[in-house]
Image (cartoon, rainbow, N blue to C red; front, side, top):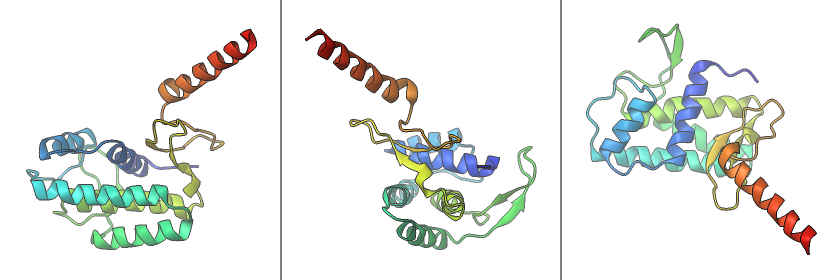
Length: 177
């Protein structure tokens, strides 16, 4: 599956937002800087609350049981963001699409770009790539971009390795009995 740079960046931001929960405007500012979200002024408590509402909508998309439900959620999210597609070539990047209106809030920015990135996966018939970690005590979100759609853990070096070691030790104990 071919995903362009902008869509990948938007998906990364969605996943990071789902797996973190900014608790104050300063943490939200760190998120904005980490993801290179441009054109955002000083963040206030209202921005934080709006982003947390967008985060909840993204969580519902990831957790939806069927594509029609996910599509309905995304349609509402994207429409609520006042989506305004436009071409831009800012900050040294080649031409790419922005889906948020100039002067959009951080929540509108995330809803528009993240919503469109998730919509792209739905349109491509790839909704099953939106996953939660299979580790019983984790549940973090991720987008499975593996070629054969086989990724099960948010991070193979932590959750995946931890479960594989536990299974190995259980087999060893069973064999010793």
